[in-house]
Length: 121
Image (cartoon, rainbow, N blue to C red; front, side, top):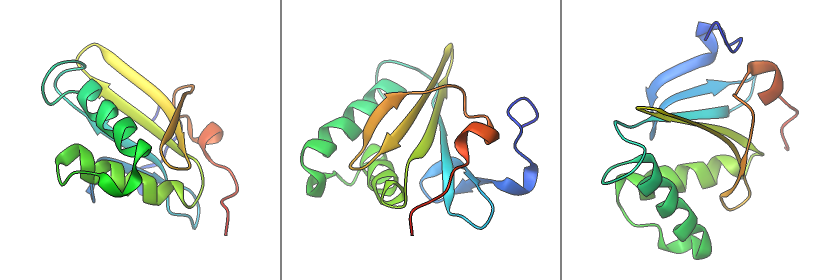
């Protein structure tokens, strides 16, 4: 929180599908965070992101799995505007921006000043 400029009141832990959510002033979540034990292999960041990308090909087909539920929630949040995504695991720090129907692009670390932006109504 200190390194990236987020105040404690802006972050909710273990809320909804993600390990943490960060909010802008008067906005819904603008940053979602998820931590896994591994970057690759079973129950890993890679497996989760692959599931998100697969479900973006056919949005109505997200499985009722951990990754599927997170993907559905991320898609819902993206309907409000771009969402910063920070995925961490042992030896991995993946930062990206999610838009639309879960299109992911590499991004800088989610500093509050770079993540906050006007949201669509």
